[in-house]
Image (cartoon, rainbow, N blue to C red):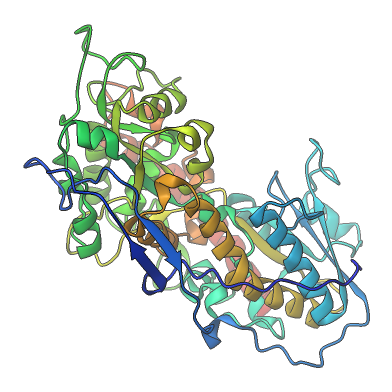
Length: 502
């Protein structure tokens, strides 16, 4: 166990809009009669955090006398995303991860260990959960896997449902109870998204808007529309062509010279993010809790795909000239004030070009399909989910550790991530604080949605968008029978798993 030292417990509740004090200066730049609601400003606004007593629903209810006598808690994590830190290095998020581990160890008298899976610098090779389970080893008790891996491994019947773990309270905010319900199959939550897996926040879909570009073209930013819930597909489409400068008149966007309205840092995810924003999902749940194909209806799917292609993949609006383009050309244009909007994810704020750009940019959620849609939806991808092997020797200890980790993460780790994001000069406008939080709060994730990779791969995204003859309707009809076959196999496996649990 790590040596005991005082743990700094801090509450940076920047996530709450009511906890933000605002001081501002400077005059507003008049806005032209263009889409939006609030003229852009030429000066930054400083926000100061205010602490509040913690919500009881964010604090764990573990018994004060729990003591597991130095037992070892070992988890393995796939990919390059470590959930814990090995030492204090003076970086806010890293050091909070380290303090989280110390907190749990001291609270429960356990020794917490994380093994990184992967051949590139990992502690262990990337393991197949079933093979490890069949080996009879019990060192690894919890495994953190990417969403699509987690779904497939869940079908192998080697994990505990979280609802069977003592001390885990899935109704608490730090387990995101609405998400926990969507992750269950047949009423059994075999995987969870707690407040330790930060990539679910970093990978939340969002839009960036360059305020310098907006000011140069006298364009209003849609702050009011977003706040009022009226930021819709039509409102975003109204910006079409407001920034367009084809310097050499070659009818395409050159990243080094031209200017454009729409770009992306994550074009491979653009179509999927747009579909989710409209509440259209390739694979969703039926009333019986089992996966079903396109229950939202093919007509809406086709409408959204056509909208996405015409607006975000138009060669006169976007610098992506071929299916082999990367997001770097768009990032370059955005960072040099020659692009108005860029679709992306919250984590893109760490990109060097965006981090070092001189101009101010702001964050918005993807728009709603229409005003009748209840909420904004920010799809997240490549999310890590925790699963507990059902051959563990002390499930009570596992449940207690997971509960303490997620509660501490919600109280400290998530605020540290947001605070770090907001420390940049272009992110300290209180409206931006609120919008970043909005993207976090409207993250969309559903276990059946992970099947999109098995059913469709990434073909409905950027690769097909480039083809002149691409038809969403024809594509859907071609792939429907294939999707149903794969889903039938998965549903059969799920049915067998639930029968074994009953």
